[in-house]
Image (cartoon, rainbow, N blue to C red; front, side, top):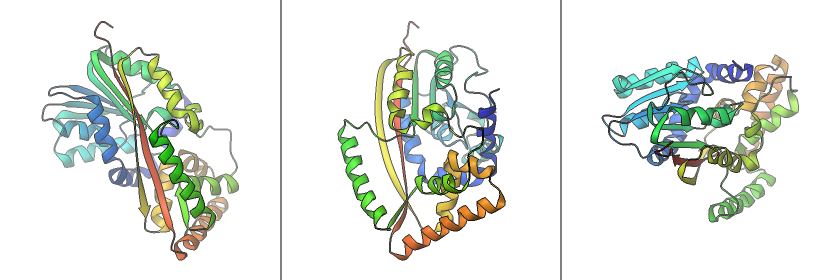
Length: 305
């Protein structure tokens, strides 16, 4: 298996608890939108690719008393929490979780009525392979719905509103009254922790300005019908530096992985500068903010395919 995938998945094991905690805070509305786009029906058999701690899988199971869900991931730590969350919600008999590689799914052709995936595609070194596998396991007429972290398309009303909001953010950043995750921690880590030979992000993830169009292009190659796109954005204001630190070291693949290879002295330096900047902003009445969003792409496998 690709070394990048193993390292990427294992990097979540140490942060499984905060990942699950923050995911429950910020991801529920996005997961519900993804399930809506998947157009699930009673009795459907669903696969959730990159299930993490199971938030999409459990939302799917709770959407109907007869929906069955398989959630796959490569992080054993996150899957353990997914199993725990499943037991807490009482849907264990209809949800199963398994360690599996999204680029080589261990399931038969045409075995699922819907394939869903939220915030996972950017973690796959070969997203085209992962999408081809999702298509392969879909039944003819089955629905594919994915969501990636991205801003809205710039040539839309949402895109213009998003840019105007960024102008306001820039003013607050310049006046020392705002810090934005995940750029805040990434900047400090890049300054004090040198890169090593291991890749921290996939090629698709690195191209932030073209993620959405790149993903749409890959999905188009599948030949889906009824192809649709949609963007949804939210923000969360954090109360203190500790929460801001935990959120960013959990959700930023760049910082999480680079800090794993940092020396103790480097890690202390990063944290000292991080806390100092947070306290300075909070003392001025400013905010610690996390903007989060999903760009959704959905479509249907043709009945004759």
